[in-house]
Amino acid sequence: MNDDVCVEREIELEGSAAELWELVATADGWRQWLVDDAAIEIEVGGVGEVVDDTVHRHVRVVQVEPERSLTFHWWEHDDPSSVSEVVIGLVGLPGGGCRVHIVERPLQPLAFARSTQQSMWEVRACLLALSVHARARV
Amino acid sequence: MSAEPVAGDALDVLFGALADPTRRQLLQRLLANGPATATVLAEPLACSRQAVVKHLQALEAAGLATPERVGREVRYRATPERLASAVGWLLDAGGSWDRRIDRLRGRNQPTRNRR
Image (tube, rainbow over all chains, first blue to last red; front, side, top):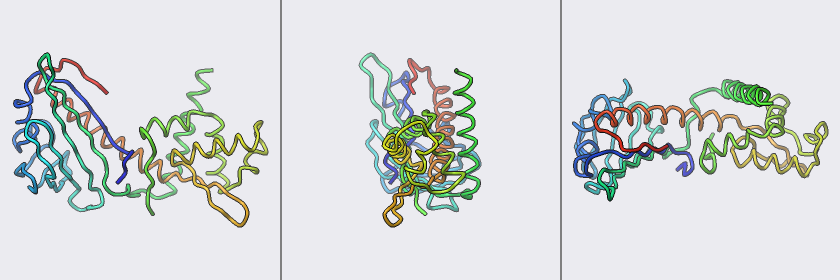
């Protein structure tokens, strides 16, 4: 697993954990914010498919703690190596509202879809941009 | 070929390593000229070999260079594949989650937003 490569987001919303759980742990809820379309039963071991910005993904539900957290794995239909783990956590706030914490991390070493040569040019472009930025600050 | 994880908070470590002009210069030379020892890399620079070694170790920690033992020498090789794959994934996934968070926010009135 790529322990240190992850995307993490957090947002505090109005509403109770029970209310937000409907958005987190039902296919209808997923269609309202997570993906364009979803066909899955959100239960441990549940498998299904979603359409995410035209990308078809397989989904497998790993862990469900009602009103607290949902863990699932998903991967692109034609690329099992793209599997990543998503954990969505909910924490009720003392003053009302709920904190939603989301982490996604790849479970396989990141694939090299691009050629090494192209990667090198991307790195060169990155270095050039940083050099220009550094000069602009002088 | 496997990609080593980019250590720490990925982008912070990555761009932290690249924020130093000497490290960028070292990485550019490794990309342009291929693997080299710290001694060779230190020659045109106004710093010691030991300082160059520390810079190379920072690049290694960020997944941007890797040491290779050749006989009695240790040569450093640029590993831009790791940078490209890690940054590509982080940017793609991060952008997707930003859009999802926006939609989730649209379902609700946020009291505060973090990260």
